[in-house]
Amino acid sequence: MISRRALVSALEDRRVTDWTVIERDQELATVTDTRRRTDDRTRWVVIVHQDVPRGRGSARLEIGALDGNARDLVDQAQALALSTVGPPWRSTLPAAPAKVDIADPALTKAALDETAAQLLAALPHPADSTVSGEIELMRERVTVQTRQGLRTGWTATQVRASALVAVSASSLELVREARRVTDLDLAQAIPLAAVDLALLGTAAAPKPGSCSLLLRSDALLHGGGLGVWSVFATHATAELERQGLVRYRLGAPVVTGADQIDEPLTVTSDGALDFATRSSPLGDDGDAVRRFPLVERGVAAGLGMSMREASRRRTEPNGGVRNLVVAPGTWTEVIPPGRSLDVRRLRSLSIDPYTGDASLEIALAIDRDGGGERAITGGIVRIDLVAALARARRSATPLRRGAYLGPSSILIEDAEVLV
Image (cartoon, rainbow, N blue to C red):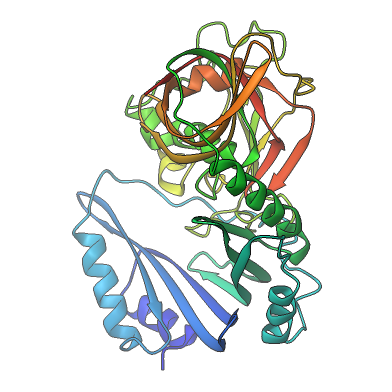
């Protein structure tokens, strides 16, 4: 069986230039309506950097506790690193890990399978609907050791819940991930899904034309991650910015006039946000996680720095872009006059990672025009997402979900729906 001591010994014997070993001892429980499963496992991440006269190569291996032996794995990682040799760079000195709480006190000593069963039994079952679910709980102890002398560890918890809600012939799957049980919010999400499914049964096809676009929380965060806000996470990647592949330029407005509007946009990456799903004391390469701005009052202000990119720029790594904190606005969610689409859910969201152009396919929306309203399904909205979000009106109501903390809805005042 592989041990951390054996891996460290093999890395030293092979004279690897720099390395990081991450050990994850995990306890898991999965409960559905028909089965219950528990598991204990150990997962390893081995990161190696090998210097040769022509530069430095890097490799990352993720392995299970019984995969081969330590020396063979180190030889494999070293060979992979040598196959990716690029320009030379130096590892930064270790910095203090971020101070962040990522373990739910209610799960640190609980029997995970019993807790998961209780959560499953507590799922709401609205009238005229059927609900089936799955609860996954994980508790892990993470230990990190680096060649430069850093040794640290922490405890983390993860909660994942999925629920399939069906009304008549329509169904909708909800997925929520959180660090704490109290952050799942399924008690409200499932009844709302049942209401939306009932509306879907009466929905008509949309009419093309101009409109204001309201994105509610499930549309705003479509896909279970950062949703539409992920465009800023991509654009603020230091490697892409250095290569000129994205429009994001430090010190410049993210779009013309973004710094001149009444409520300019501010977006922050906060990997030290307590109990957020992308929070961690250390980043994926063993670098310290830090809080830093991406956009300040409409101006590009910061980049997610890996260890390699930080070395090239002679600055400090920050763990990369992680949780996003978006400053709220003052919009009170009043529906504007004229035609508006109040989008409850999207069927798909496609974002070009370089240009920020996006295509939003509507699953369910309320079309309001001239005092009347009707449910619609279908239709596509194509927009410059960077410009739209920079100029959007943001609600004052906060929403915390997964890796996101920010307004629960936004209003984009100039959009067009296509059919």
